[in-house]
Image (cartoon, rainbow, N blue to C red; front, side, top):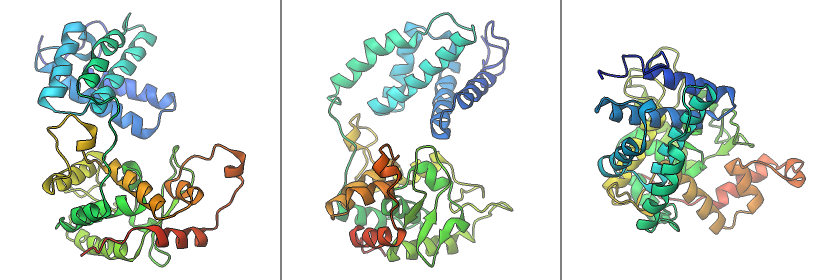
Length: 324
């Protein structure tokens, strides 16, 4: 077969790019979060591009082609077992969609995942692996090693506020309240409280980035706090690349290791934030509020936390890093 991204795929009557778009539109209709949809879309595009090299498509998957996908992810891309699981979850969800639309009869991912993925994880001792947690001094070393003002601001803000990657990239300059040193986040399905705070050293790093931002060729009307090289809003992959590359330079990330605890991703900053504020004595209720965790119990739903009190507690507990 010729390039499947241009030709129609078998009997479904449209190309692979359109298939992915139709699938993601269905995900939106089902109410999946934007983060989940972006993850599915990105993973499917990567697998599709790999399959196209052999003249295969996403609708051609069988036991043998799935083995080649698994080998590609683990050997060529060197992704962690957890991330391998994310790729196959995306493929499985796609096939559930195909079955629903009567474009496929079976889901080949389910038996493959049961047979191979659990063995893959177990063979590398990852059944008890934990996300990497670095010390306060290691976080200080990481951030102070970053010379680029944008990269330094990204990692500082992730660590000092505990926001998720999607929340960071959605921030606009106008969301920053400099007087009260807080940021109002965009509405998200996973987040209850939309206000996060930052301290004095974070303010210095952020202002330094905003001065550097003026030298970027920012697109007209783009108010994003963090922009990419092309002048538009920085994307999820851009944030991931910045964090991982900076962590790799100081020995905090090993891309060749299959162990989750050897990898430092943007989410590790949220893990760092949560752990060290708790260790510094911040109450569980205040920590949940700063993280924006969902309120599942009536006592949480009707307990209105005073923002001034929360800010003072945050400033007392957030680690000082001696940033330069």
